[in-house]
Length: 317
Image (cartoon, rainbow, N blue to C red; front, side, top):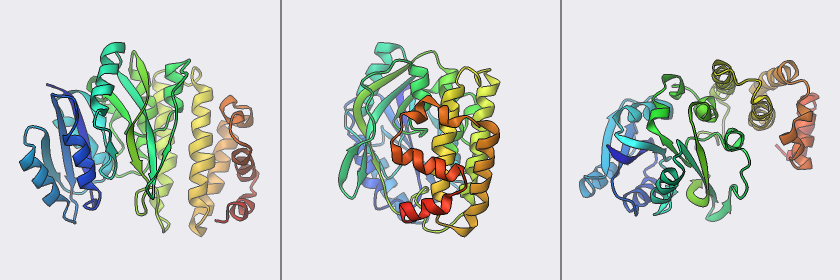
């Protein structure tokens, strides 16, 4: 067993992969592995993987599988991982050279099942801090409200071995279906207020599609699945306000904005409005929503009241 298994799914990222792998093979910690899953990538990514595997045979553990999507690649890699902890890194992103060391030290110091670090968002060589963890009053609630992404987190493998926490395969929004629920299977969660992860925003990534894809509708199944996990742990009422805000942020706000540019998305927007009216009719009283900026509240209110065409004009969509 090694301390950490870093899992990197690879598909059509030959342009970005070297920077990612450079950051992973030059970590300051010892006793870790990098599991790279070539998910049937048709480009030259495998040549790059082979090069790094040859140069760093004690670190790089390469595997090739038929294309099945990021969730499939992550699930596959998890079964190959020997680490006490798991960290997911997207193949177009990179991490600080001391990221694994800092995360593992925090896990050991706090006896944590999960450690969450802050991150930089990188857009056209512009770096902006995505969040700050200066004050964490309730780690569980803060975790649920944190970005529902698999990356930026060091997670004890024992937590992820629960089959109900496997990523939903052949699915968009596979992260949000399970990641916020990790906390329900843990004893302790820590936050590290140091930006150790670099998240690259690029055209052509999964959530930046230029054309409508029906897979955008997977958000409905993913949120249903997430809700079922909270229900199975009898936590729906305990974390009602946090779950409600997940729906506000990821369904009413973010998902609607993804559907808005397309005629095909109008039916889904109507479905979103119906879900919010039935599940969370008093969502405007949500304490987290009340803390959002005025523009955010205006957009959500207009969408909820069916004035989403006005939103298109306001946001110039």
